[in-house]
Length: 582
Ligand code: FAD
Image (cartoon, rainbow, N blue to C red; front, side, top):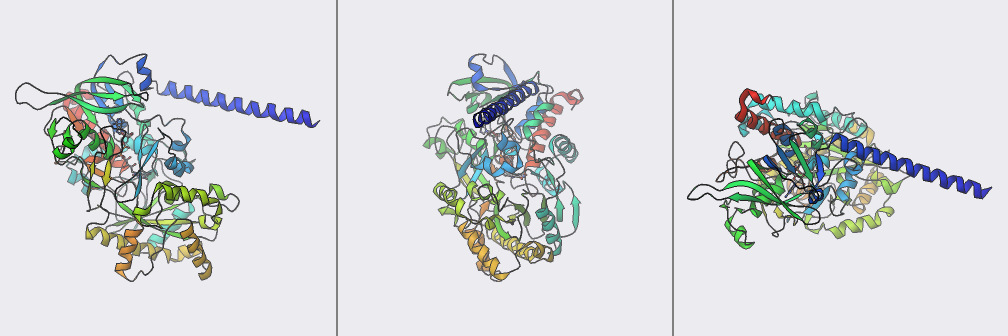
């Protein structure tokens, strides 16, 4: 009898496996039908590209996808992305896997971890959709002031944001932690309440999200469906090594005419552009690729023996990242996981956000701190330079021993506006796969530190609000005990003396983490002109967050996506006028 039951169980198990395989295959087939224009670079060994494209776009990320979709309405476009497909990757698709995606260190994973020279652990997208495929999903527009300062055409900006929003942005289902945070912000005086809005306005608001109500992510890659697929080739796992230039006889400027890229097997291919090469490789990838192609500071090009196409001392300069500081708040009961949904936009140069992880008394191993998970590098109990991959490894080893209560709670996060502290990017090798060396100089500018102190003080007011008292541990002793556990669990210190500004400044420096809003490196009117054309050469643009002088809105992705669409429409209307039809 036992043998029959065992056999039945095995058969049942095999059937389940078969069903899963069929579902997976059908899903893959479905993806293929839906996205026939996406193929891996290795497939080119069998069927090479023999076409010269009107536009070659480097980097299928947050700006590259909407730009490619738009230009392909009227011209042939080749989009080259170093990462793989987001489709079928559960670390990309599921909100609850946010922190798992960021810890995946297998070669070719969707996120690439790096540590800036400041010692802060950071991440960048390496997947079609770029940062939008691995981020926390919060969607909020740049302010009208930012739009004016960027010199953009306001009417076209107001057409371009909704183009994105109609396709991939959702209204969130407000999680309990986010609702409590909304009320806490209002009690702390971050008012008025502006309800649900994409707009960047003072006060408290609920913004858009890339996650639908089931927690399934849309990404910038989905925008490719709005392109003309006859005109669009998207090659994934295609890592662009350098941009090719033709030097005119005589004195004219060099012209970008194509690129060299490599597949996973390190086989090289060339692609040619009749029109332009457009670099949308992100705030790290774009300055890196310009340098590798011979456009950059002379000392850097000489150091790596890169033939000079154009001496441009400002490539890689003006790199900045918005520092994030956080406070962990233990709660009486487990809270539901939430990434960012509500924000407080203060008049003192700080933005306050909130997140909660997953804490369960029955399942300690799957507990996590969401955005502040130590596994992803947000180890703010030790000062930046001591945060290493070994520290993460140590945490993972002893995670089982950490009391589950430590995971019951949520975070308040303070991010500063701007920032005014800037750093630089330099190459760490001649291979594009080598992560460049990046320095952000967090809090070097005194105003950034003041903004951080203001942010921490606002967070403390929120913690003391009546609404938060319902949530948090009210017993002094338990509170202390849990905070000690927090230290053991590598979550946040709590500022020791909030009346003393210098103590708060120290807290800001010691507990600084990133909110991953790094930008700069190919800034407007320094490296690119107001049409995003690289100054000093022909046929080359950079269109992404590397051109920003500061981070737009509370969170940048909406504006980066909008920029891709905006520049695409501008280019089409510039070339075709009304015939462009966009
Ligand atoms: P990307 O979007 O990453 O685009 C660059 C693309 O180019 C990548 O796909 C990359 O693989 C590719 N590439 C680079 N070099 C090459 C090359 N040589 N050849 C071919 N391809 C190349 N913003 C928000 O607004 N809301 C949030 O909630 C939010 N949360 C975040 C959470 C995390 C973990 C991260 C990392 C970011 C978050 N951001 C958020 C920031 C936002 O996602 C980014 O600012 C935005 O996506 C732009 O990122 P990027 O500049 O790195 O470019």
